[in-house]
Length: 173
Length: 112
Image 1: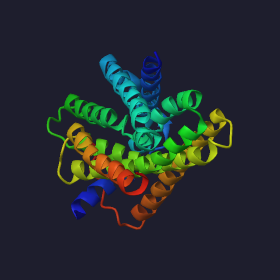
Image 2: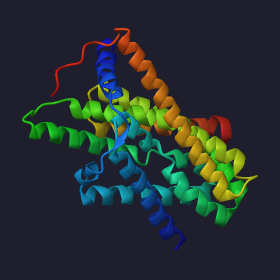
Image 3: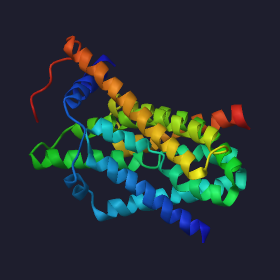
């Protein structure tokens, strides 16, 4: 378990050195059928949620508004792309893909706290505000809460790394 | 017809958030978009128009429990990938058990 924590810590410390930025070229790495699969999955989950809510009521149907609709496809793609990148560099056996997917999951865990904020805000504001405005406010809460927690964790990891708690980073590649 | 609209809007919103997550770096930050309220954004607007605000407020209250289940889902996926060395696709599917147990269990205990 300590080894597991150390390995993730090394990756997180490495990542905390990166600035948040867009890489438009990353969009080209995703193939058309991967986009189609996500569309299909997202559409299906949305329809299923609606059907469940109309058949079993909003109390049960509402649970599925937080169904992991994006994570399964994105984690699989992250792992696949990372593995392919390593294979192109001549590294056949690598755990880098799985580690990258685990980092994606770590982000999803933080985002889910933001999602709870989204749901709470929508629950309290939708009955008393204009619908579009209440949902926009809920979206802002999700974004703000998620980014704040992500920044706080990054700050904590940087401090931990500086204090020498993090093991040495492995050589590049 | 309404189901078709839901399907198209849902597919588009989920794809949009997912593409955003693809383009953002570093990966832990991009992961935030894996828990984006994509299904909720696609569904709730349409539901306000068809079922009314109280219906949506009730759905959102249940979504709080779904969100807690999503947190446990992500933690379970991390554990499966890093401790048990399960690949991402299998971990994402296996962890759905954690989501189901937590979401449906909390509905059964607290909201039913």
